[in-house]
Amino acid sequence: MSFGIRIGPILGLMGTLIPLSPALLGLSAGNLDQLAQNLVVAFSTTVLGLFIAGICYGIWLTRRQWYAADLANVEYICQSLQLNDVQADHKEIEQNERQITNECASTIVE
Image (cartoon, rainbow, N blue to C red; front, side):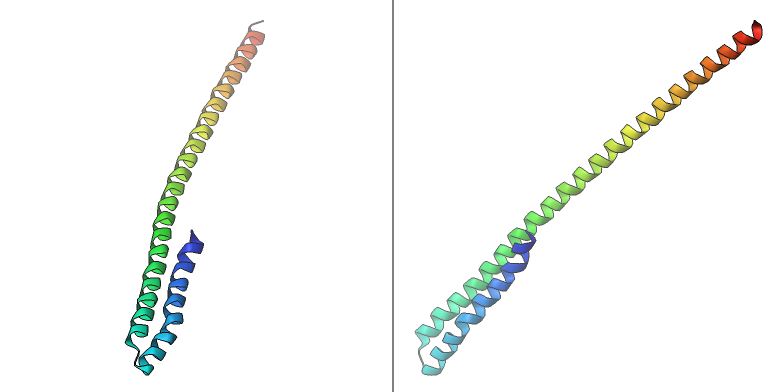
């Protein structure tokens, strides 16, 4: 997409400048038909190049938003999983502490 964003205006500019030379030659020779034809080509390629760049830019923006949303979802899931692991670790530690306390209490009683 970034290639289309960059190359579209470049091709449009090239398409404008290349037929401009024959158009100016037609103007100097008094050939208005040649001038008109070359100007139509020049302006059409400019519009086409900008259109291509605009479409590519719109697609790029949409994809960027999708990727940002996906990244936010992945971060949320990772944080949730990490929180669940921490909570499970705390429960396991509490169970171990209770077991050790019970064992100590039973050895003291004996």
